[in-house]
Image 1 (cartoon, one colour):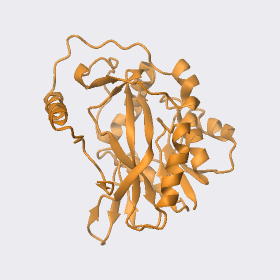
Image 2: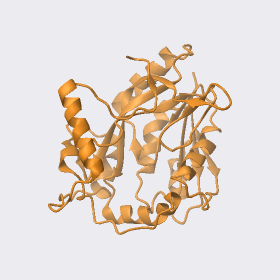
Image 3: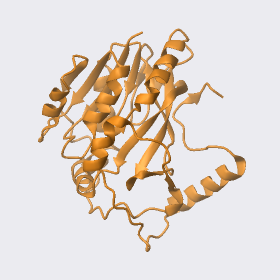
Image 4: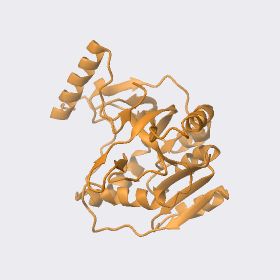
Length: 287
């Protein structure tokens, strides 16, 4: 069994991504790791070269700044990296996401177990979306997503978040997936406030938006914040000490949006029924 890892990056240092930790966390699982690297104005490429692992292959790319439709440029860059993978399975991990060293064996075992099962097209992970500070998580968004895809099926990525499988030329569907046996630890919303502002400044154009001032992480409904009771991956410990945001103060004047109210209702329904009903971009084979 051969496993490919892949990601895309541009100005990872300037934007506060723990991308070195992210890639290092995935290397024990992968036989090769493909990076689609856009033109950078910082030391991102130098830091990638310092990892000094023969599994890594960098593909230099040019981002289409005219593509400003719902972040589709992310999907384009994701596909460039994916289409250069040569493994049986392809693991997609973003620059602010990290795998836990205690879960690598379980993930690998599942890929080996279902390698010859054509119905298993992908594996999904549970997500810890850290928010505001590293000892708490937000639960208002997606909580599971497929990040390993069988590399011999016709698939593409119209979005950075998910995959679409093409059974026929004109119609797509989400992949049939099983649980990977691990979690994705997502640190994008605990980068320090200045780095988050710089990210907003640089990427808003890809959503056809103008950058706005980032007031901090306090503008959020407290009902969607939960304490994190697990352990962080060891490889990200230094980044958490030096680069993560630890000051979090909820805005007492924050007013709930329509979306917040819908999320609160959904959480109440989940509590009443004992179900988890966040959006899924896969068909669950484990049910």
